[in-house]
Structure formats: structure tokens, C-alpha cells
Amino acid sequence: MLKGNTAIVTGGSRGIGAAIAKKLASLGADVALLDIGNEEQAQLVCEYCKSEYGVSAAYYSCNVADFEQTKQVVTQVSKDFANVTVLINNAGITRDGLVMMMNEKQFDDVISVNLKGAFNMIKHCSRQFMKNKCGRIVNISSVSGLSGNAGQANYSASKAGLVGLTKTVAREFASKNITCNAIAPGFIATDMTADISAENNPLAAQIPLGRPGTPEDIAGAAAFLVTSPYVTGVVLRVDGGLGM
Amino acid sequence: MVFETVCRIIAERIECDPESITRESTFRDLGIDSLDTVDLMMNLDDELGLELELDEKLETVGDLVDFIESKQE
Image (tube, rainbow over all chains, first blue to last red):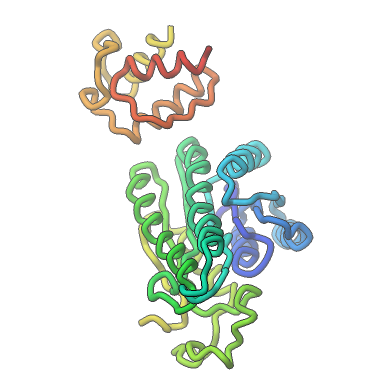
């Protein structure tokens, strides 16, 4: 289905990013995993994609918050792989704290990676998408960005920002066969949420589907958006019904 | 030289006579929106073997020619 296409996945070494990379590889896409510092895990994901699905896969060290670095890495990926048409902006960090306790650095760091990082990647990939006459961008937002979440002013602001970014990019590039959508995961069991166990999170008990989500649940939604050329500007909640 | 190339590529895009395009022609008058301008730059990249990065809005064909010539130096 995606044979002959290359997908760039940021934050691709573990959790949701790794699951998306594997899912897209299972559909035939070559994958370029961008991550900062988790080379060993990223290489494992690459090996898995190559051996299970026979696609090409490579890891690139990249801090998505760094404008120049993202430019260089996207240029390098475009040289190493043919036909870059998919971008998954998944890289994200948390620096949680109540507003009264949150310092400037905590706020800036989260906005830089989660929001500016997505802009940097879109900006530099858009050139490739225009050249290749196709682009499928999926931004991983969060229900935290839609509903807010106490202790996550920085994170929820960054994820709400991604919604605005998604819709603007969708409008700007619609005529060029470049789509841009967002996924708003609910409570997903990953390393990032490991310290918020299901027992001590009252939200978890309220999930209508009765369980936290898995990275594979998000990967399925990402695959849908990547393979749906008539869907753009959408924010797809994948939250077990939590937000209805 | 750059001017002729730009005129030819624009003329192919909007299907008009290249002779009818002048340095003073605005993209708006030619029916080329800002996203099309980016697209146009990419065609010119291929033609001229440059990696042009557009970070300002250009109004006229002359602006574009000047921009490309400044990058060629």
C-alpha cells in the first residue's frame, strides 16, 4: 500500500513512534527514524522493520527543536531514501508541574520540542512533498491539548498549538496533494506515562472502552490517515471514548 | 539569461506568450498565488541547479529574477 514511499517518524525509537514506524513498514513504507539519544532502541526498531517487512530503515540522530539540524537531517534522508511522502511528528516531552511551580525552562523546553519541532519538520519536509507531488503529515497531539490537564500547562499548550498548526498546514497545502491531520491520543500506556499508573489516575477508570490505549491503537489511526487522501485538517481522538 | 528562463517557465505554467511577461509583471496579475510561487521556485531549482530558499514574499517577476541572481553570485 505504501511501497515506494518513505516515512519520516520523529521520536521513533519507542512508544507510539516505534509502533507507527512498524505499522507503516508493514504497509510497505521505508522508514527513517529520527530520535535524540536512543540510538540502541531505534536500531532495534529499524532491524525489526527490515527483517519483518523487507523495507529499508535507518536511524538519524536529530533534535527536532533545532531548526538547522532538522534541515540537515531532512536533506540527508532525502538523499538516502527515494520519495519522502510521509511525516509523522511524534517526538514529544513532558515537564509536568502546576503553573505556580512551573519555571520558564520547563515551559520553553516543551514548546520547543513538541510544537516548534513539528513546525521545523513540516517546513523542511514540505519541499520534498512539493517535489514528490504528495505529502501525508500526521501530528501527534493529545487530549490534553483539547481538554486541558492540570499540571500540564506547557504540554497541553503545545498540543493545542499542534491542532492550529495542523489546520493551517492542511489549508496551505491542500491544493498540492499534501494532507495534514492530527491524532489526539487519550491515556496510552507508554514509557512517558509509566509514572501515571492506571490505579492512581482517576481518568483511567472513566475510559468507556475499559482500558488504557496501546501504541498500536495509535499506529492504526496513523496508518488510516496516511492512506486516506481525502481526509485533511482532522483531529482524530483515539482515546477509548474518554472525550465524548 | 535568468529573466528568459523565468519567463519561459512562467509562460509554460500559465500558458501564455513569454514575450508578454515583463520585469514589472506582478505574480498577482499573472494569476500566480504565493504557493504557486514556491512551486515555481522549485521548477527553477531544477532548471538552474540551485537550492533556492524563499523566505520573503516576492511581488514581481523582476523581484524573482533579482533574488535568483543574488543567490547565483
